[in-house]
Image (cartoon, rainbow, N blue to C red):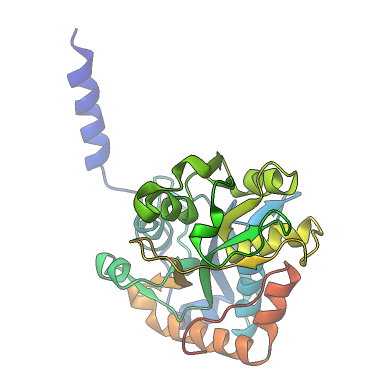
Length: 286
């Protein structure tokens, strides 16, 4: 019996089968009438969102609570896994749903503010951004006199996550010059632990992740400066993050944007970031 064509045929039937209806993402009036805001945040995304001791914590978690409080509704927080790309995450959590018919989120946080992403995803609408991410480096004072450009890496090793933006930047920078310097780890957490243990004099990642890791380890700031350096490569070294809703829930996006503006104005957003040892970096326009 030829099993491969049969399996392919079954796969085709599964792909063609319609998904069961999921409770739709809702506009503002439905959210306020129900009294609950369903917000999706990523798991394993410290310091923005992760599960610790069975409870969600992080900047995005606290921000979701603050947004719900500002809108005078209760928070229904969902910690979701990251898929292969953001497009798939938006599809799964905001407008199409999963095979089980899980109720869709009204709002998803930590979505890159990117024009091409928006053009590819007509089914969603993006909120105002709330944080600017950037690639940065921590280095051990004494091992380096300073860190003003990538050239300062020299022949020193760099600890970093194997699939992060910093990795892609360094792999492609200056024609791949720094590839021999890179010490890859499965996660940023492992890379940070290696750096703190002295296995590498330089740690690469996002500024937020680096600052949070150093703060959690109570590593002296003076001995572990954090620097950003210019790069002329194709990889973005700075990008803004915000939220997304379904395209027919734009009034909710505007209300969330107003809430974020208020949280920034009264200092609460900055305070949330400082709770995790992170410097609040406002996006352009704030």
